[in-house]
Length: 210
Image (tube, rainbow, N blue to C red; front, side, top):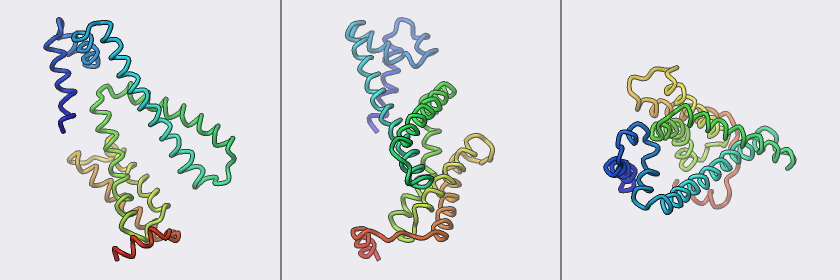
């Protein structure tokens, strides 16, 4: 909770110390760089800003690689073509990385506010992941097909609510509706598909709980 106050505090300090506070208000993205340069000077401030950008890039490329891995390994190699050779997977990884990068860039340019973009991201992510995670832990009849279908259905419901295709009276109903749809779809698909035998360690865990 303490960390959540730091960005707001940095913005307030940038406005207070700036010789032209209106420029900071009109362009909030310049607040932190302006604050650093004002406090540390142009030389040290430039190094500090470069370090921040390096940390951002390091996180961004890791998340981009993780997203590519989900698409190529968890989806394509697991469900679509399990016997795909490594060269084909490599080519698909390159294409997927470029595609996801362009989509991320388009989202960043379309949605100007960072906080707004984070909220939208969690609005899509949370309804799709919450139910499959809980049922995957506590319901031994859950299957990977059911979990995948539940995640897609819950996230799609959230997207429809965010874009206004489906109207909700309150914004919070997007989470609830997405979770309910995810639960129904996961249960139905899990019951319609065959559950794989549990590994020995997982079998022990479920036996203790039951």
